[in-house]
Image 1: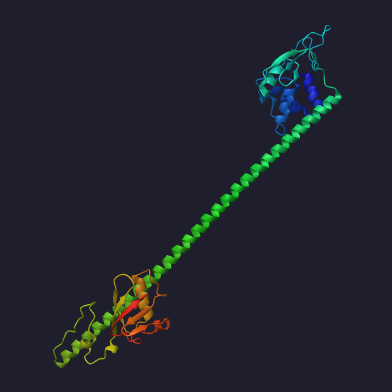
Image 2: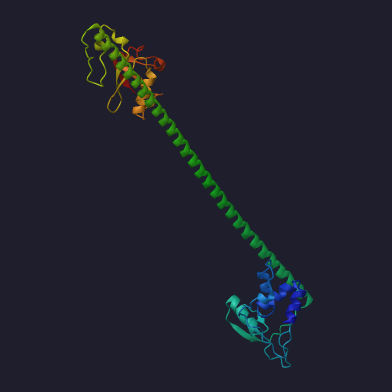
Length: 329
């Protein structure tokens, strides 16, 4: 209605929002329009052609009704001038407004009233506008609090996500470091095995050349060549048979039996000039649970415990030639 529009504009509401509210509420009256303006405060105003009217019947106007004053007062004073809600005491100009109030509040007890709804005075308009503005400020404050709460929740989620990503990265870095450590250890074992294999091949070549030289010498002197005796363990050549009269400590190789704290003993034939550290590397290559940096060696007879300084000495210097039994721990 034109009177509702003029009154809402006079209360300080923007004309475009007033037109939107009146159309959206199907011109149901001043109160529904003000409720619509309050509920949609801050939202952009759409094109009126795209606004759909709510399911609120427009107010039914009588010829005797005034735009703002409701039904005219009869001379007898007994004519119903308004509709009153028996549950909250509010009065409404017509049935449409009463129905709108019933839908919003759930009240269902109404009665006819002889009270006349008069137009708002200027003072009442100012008071109503102040109340509406106060309600709008409360609603804005509540909305701001809700948005702040939602922002804090989103920030917590973001931070937790960042912490989870950090934990995953740290775990991946730790796994990568462990993988690199295992690879370095494996490379070290492979290197020790390769060195041991090279030394073994060198010793085998030495033996072959020595046997060939002895055989050629025997043939030149017209003597019968005697094949060197081979021991029953590991195929090592007996030092006394290969070179009669040679001291056992001069043997180019030594036969080691290494007894571990658990598991089967290890046997190896190594060059006499090999160091005790190379023996430790050999043990580590056969049993990855043992570290060459912490292993210790000892002999039972005579009883002797080798110190870390002994690891740089050769087997010959440690009197472990031509054979020895080592206890590893």
